[in-house]
Amino acid sequence: MNAPLSEISRIPGLKRIETFSRDEMGALCMERTRAVYPHDQVYGRFCTIEEYIDCPPDEVFAYLADVRSLEEWTWSTRGFEATDEADLLVGWDRLADDTRIWCRTVANAAARTIDYHCAWDQGRALWMIYLMRVIPAAVVLNRPGSVVTWTNCRHPFYDHNPFPEAAPDDRDTWVGDLWPFFYAGHVVEMENLKKILEFRHASGLPMRPWTD
Image (cartoon, rainbow, N blue to C red; front, side):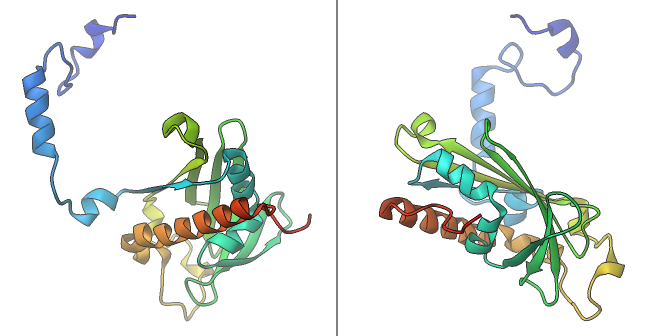
């Protein structure tokens, strides 16, 4: 299938082999490949981490899709309870004092995606979105187990609390203040996830030990 050159040829700045040579592409890639990158350049707008987990992908997906798992592998979210709204839970984020967190889990078993739609202080607008995907390691690494990716996008509300009236009066921390530490913090939580699932898988234990 041929690309519609009559249309895309009018778009300035495209780099395609028809108009941008191999030598030009190689030089550009060398220019853009650095030994050191500023933290904000890498994690300023998006924060993505990934990990290999020696546990079958269906088991990893089922664990993550169950919101109760958040109380095990995350560092600070605890005490989730049902609300009057379907699939919407409310718990505590111990990352800050007296802070409630609302969460709705949106999972797709066929794609093995798990998206946690969350927000501090209120449950009307769930703007803190944690996007996770479980990939069979057999497909991408030619080995048993799973690869898990996790992405956060820097929603503008991270910079300014959209619901200050819902925040505790004495709380001096906003979740967006911590964005520079998201990568490090999420790596710690991903390590927790890996250790929990690999331990249970190696020990022949249920991935979700709680009772329904």
